[in-house]
Image (cartoon, rainbow, N blue to C red; front, side):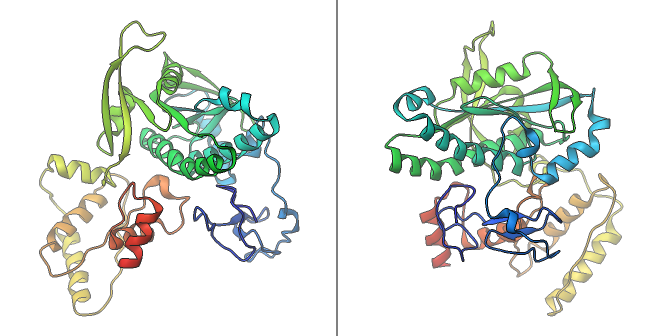
Length: 383
């Protein structure tokens, strides 16, 4: 059984890839529930999964063949309100470094096999953050974040997708190095700017018009990036600087631009999970008219200290201050003799099972961003 992410062979009884940890599952065509590759029938609806024994061939010219169902449904359900609108998006360009050299040294069939695995990783990482792949470029992809599915945090999603792509490609590159004796690295460029969305067909094909040089600059940055790095424009940097660490590369000359362009290299995500954390670091205005709600939270906390577990839900319209209330509650109890673990549900984390639980487990084990597999194993076994 092959892992859909890194292509490693796994025993039939495995539920997770022994090489990269990816869950070995597919989607039931009848009810969209997750099913294991070895399952004969769907555990939710009983559908015969015999037709899923072989992975269907992906046609990179047909968006509906590689776009996940949950994302395709969002696009088609909202296309009437999207078409013709001007959207602020982040464009991601990615390609394989030294692709021409690789293509010269290997048989075309081998190149096709390598690129097929590469494209599957790119699709997984981009779709995880609800980006849409607009086109395949032969040795890479162009993707949009923020259109046709609108996201106010489109630049953050693009940065996360770019960095996680490099992380996923590291394992895949090791496999290529071992089998073919050559390096396999990606170069990625990001830029944020306006586009006008045109028509969206039933097959998910999308026409759009880029305003200014939104896509052109992203492509130029990708071509200037060192293998294994992500270059970010000043526009994207301004939208993401509170959530990611960057190296300032200063102004550089970019083909087609009369003046040097400020460029930044994305390094890693900061330990910041929400806008309220960013605001708190800058300084918050006093909280008013929320004493009753705070009293409810403190009452639940008092019962918890007595040994009676409590679950509290904060429900309200967007913007009424749920995050601020949670922040103030945490500040109230920090002086108590307790251990506080926090899990977050970011908007781009919907496709990641048990994400808040995984975050708490990482905090407990001391796992940090950038830790490799060996370090993670050491920390888990020593905890």
